[in-house]
Image (cartoon, rainbow, N blue to C red):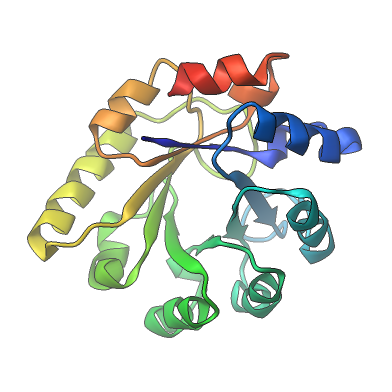
Length: 213
């Protein structure tokens, strides 16, 4: 069964606790949190304090995507909170293996995140070390963008590489995900669908989540 991860970035931040309660009741499998620093991407969201508050009121796993230039500074605090999934961009670290295993030693499922223009080859050497791979299907930084079809080419390439290495990991896609492209994404091996405005932009969260499934 494919997992649905509503992106908190699209929620009503003045009523965040209630929004989390509603998507949990609607059948969300995990909550996706985009932490942005205003440097790696042209936007600024929230930091560790808000993340910890979200963790305290969430009964489903947190999936934290670090869109920051210094992801290592976030690893230990996220581990202390008990965050379940963390992904970061390989371009932001000098020693990719070391960063991956630092997170894994904290008991965190570890992922690499690839922007649309970042080649799959960037993580080819570490695919067997990852728990999941996050493909951005829009250029990161803002919600509500249109899905980029080149994502399907990258999914096919990843499938071939994983088959060659006889390795399985979870594939996650974030950006412009809706009920129209969800079937094609699933058929191309995607395990986790991140959706922000598609879910939070409608009053009936359960209907939107079920339509993605």
